[in-house]
Image (cartoon, rainbow, N blue to C red; front, side):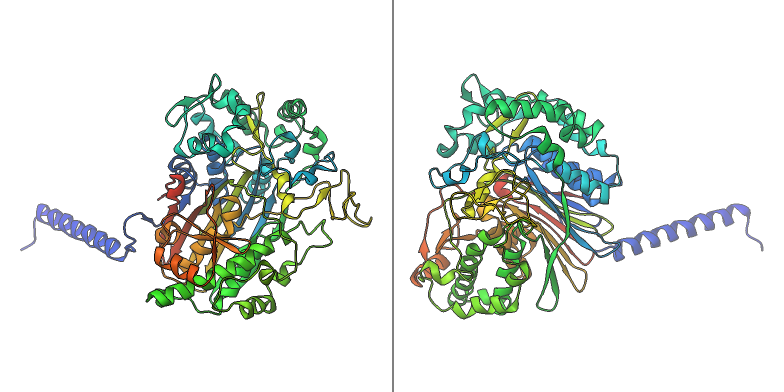
Amino acid sequence: AAMSPGKVCCLLLLALGALAVLVSLVVILTRPRCGPQRYLHGAVAADTETCSAIGRDILKSGGTAVDAAIAALVCTSVLNPQSSGLGGGVIFTIYNASTGAVEVINARETVPAESPRSLLRDCADTVFHVGARWIAVPGELRGYEEAHRRHGRLPWRALFEPSIKLLSEPLIISPVMDKVIHHPLFSSLGGRLCPLICDGQRFLRHGETFRWPALQQTLRVVAEGGAAAFYEGQIGKALVEDLRKAGSNISLEDLQAYRAEVSTALNVTLDNHTTVFSPAPPAGGAVLIFILKVLEEYKLRAASLASPQEKVEAFHRIAEALKFGNLLKAQMSDPAFSAAQRTAGTLLSDRIAELARQRIDSRGDHPLSHYNLLESVYNQRYRSMGTSHVSVLAADGSAVSATSTINYPFGSFVYSNRTGIILNNELADFCTTNRSIAPGEHPCPHPPLRARTNAPASALGEKPPSAMVPSILISKTGDMLVVGGAGGAWIISATAMAIINKLWFGYDLEGAIAAPIMHAEGDTILFEEHFSEEVRTGLLERGHKEKKPHLRMNVVQGVSREGKCISAYSDKRKMGKSAGY
């Protein structure tokens, strides 16, 4: 007998229901099991949870990895103004998944047309080089502009709107900012920032609030008028007037002449499997890759940490590689201006890595000259810690590693009341090479000018050497690590050790970044708090000389992809938290 229409309808509904359940089960069973705090589409690791979330929301709204990085950096300049901002500079390392190309946009600050010829003779006189004389021409916004022009998708203003909204509410003094402004090294300098973060002449404390209407207005103008509003418009004019009153020689012509530079990233393949991409000089990518190349031949693995003796041996080799790399940093001059520049190719050659390994024995008590592969003159008075890093991985596989800086915490400690901008002190970076600035000098065909010292002169438009190493690592199987650090002189050590922990020791991303590190300074080693006492003792028994850090602010942000699972980690040293979806 034929079934009634009602029964047919019921059977169809049951079949459709069973099919829906089956499809759901297939989706659930075939979906990658990524575990907690892991993501399938994209992620952002910035200094703060708020800025990571802003970057993530940009990705979710259809923005590119570059869009997300810019939005997160603008946010960071608001919430961590001691680290970065429009008065500083930025370096982007960008991986384009559709082309497979990796490029670097260098928007570091540059030497202005008028700089005191004798400025860098003052390098040895003080430990902290602050004040208007040390301000270089800011490049941050030109860097954003170039990155967005080449790789952006969302409207420019959309990248600024979340931070403009943040500035509508009172901002809270964070634990990190509180640590800086009340640290003995900086507290005597901070009075210049009182228009922003003081109650009368008293510095605000953690948890207290301040407002920043001048920066909000600047961001509104930039959001509508683009970078030109800063470099050619009313913001630039107001900024220059404030800087002139403070004692700087930066002119509107300096701002108008600024250009970001685009180049191919340095790259080296480790273990015939993973390629490291990092920025060329004057950034520190060549030094980072050199350190990894030296260590590559030692075949460091998780098994290298199996026993106390093996662990000490592994960290001894890392410590020695860091010492060699530390002495190479001063060679990272701007290749467009420095006749004495050692090419990145030399640093990345097998020959120089082998030379370093030949000098690594079982002892750590060698004189400084032992580590000087290029027989350079090392000047260890310079330090900087005012830096911020953002790592982004988008759903299409594109990635951005971006490091932004104003050099010292709060840069030059010069605040522009009219624009709300805190200015860098990047000219202090030339103290690492102990050179003098010659105003108005241009590169070849004319021979370089010389100051009254015999040191090479720094030139108009030159970018200072930097430890910044925004890096991207890609394996043959497509796994990826997007990583970089903040913390001035500690950046290369911190980033190198995070990579070593992840790539060779087999740590997960959080463990790789959170593990206490060591840093080389000259022929000495500085150990982070909570560093393995067993390893520290073993290294001291091998003759390594220990130096106690006065102020350590090393921070690393990272995003990794293994298979289809994405992990992101913002360093807890700066109270950071990542975001993804």
